[in-house]
Amino acid sequence: MRRAAVVCILFVFAMMMAGCGQGKQAANKQVKVGITQLAEHPALDSIRKGIVDQLAAEGYKDGSSMKLEYINAQNDMNNVAAIAGKMAADRKDIIIPITTPSAQAVVNQAKDTPVVFSAVTDPVAAKIVPSLNKPKANVTGTSDASPMDKQVELVNAFVPKLKNLGVIYTTGEVNSSVQVDMIENAAKAKGINVVRVGVTNSNEVKPGAESLAGKVDAILIPVDNNVVSSFESLLKAANAAKIPVFASDSDTVKRGAVATYGIDYYKLGKQTGVMAARVLRGEKPGDIPVETLKDVQLIVNTKAAQSFGLSIPEQLKKGAQIVK
Image 1 (cartoon, helix red, strand yellow):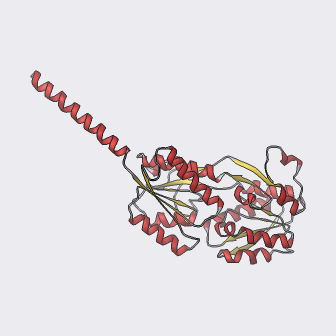
Image 2 (cartoon, one colour; image 1 turned 135 degrees about the vertical axis):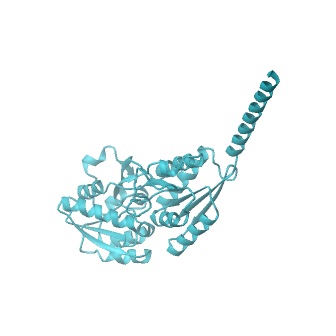
């Protein structure tokens, strides 16, 4: 009886040791991570850097514990679909699409692969998840929804006689249409008319800005991939027409827009990285609610304001991050 008990104890101990060995092996396994991004511009690049930096901080370092594949679609929707298909076929441990079009393509093709998206303004309207609190079984992520009511208030503070506000956006991007609707609702409450200019690609952004000459008192740019990618050409047209330009992200203010209540896209990337690490450790994406970065910062470009003949309102100076 004693011998049987000893044998049993030794067997249990051996199984425990084997389990420990397997756990250590799993922890040391090189995970396959795919990041796909619609286009290259500072805001999206900041998100990607934040994701990679946070994954490294979580123990998933590229080249050792993680094999990272990053593919940029170069703002081509055909590339977006092809990249999503490739990553789904590669059986990644996780796919991290940045932007709404990239997330839509990945979710449509990667039915069994865990997906953690970033920079999707309205994932419900984009039909990426049915609910923010209870997303799909294999999908969750972060939203870059910007407070459009505050953006309209900000433009009005700089331009007190604001009557007509121009908005340039991509008609084919759900996230852009959602933002423009929010701008329009906020503007209507203040008696401000919104003049929409829809574009289908980045080549139409400058002509779109030129068409607003003499029609609007200011331009507000939503977080729109085509428009943000072509911001310099838009700014050139706005400067020629003497129309001040405001943005919805901090990086575009650094490039020459007057001001924004913007989110820090690097921080959003790090937040996405934390969620991705949770999934890589075994949590189900569907059990993790979609998150939004609540911390917005007033950012003002003094040089841009001066170039449009605007002064910074006294009530905004306190607490503002100044870009010179």
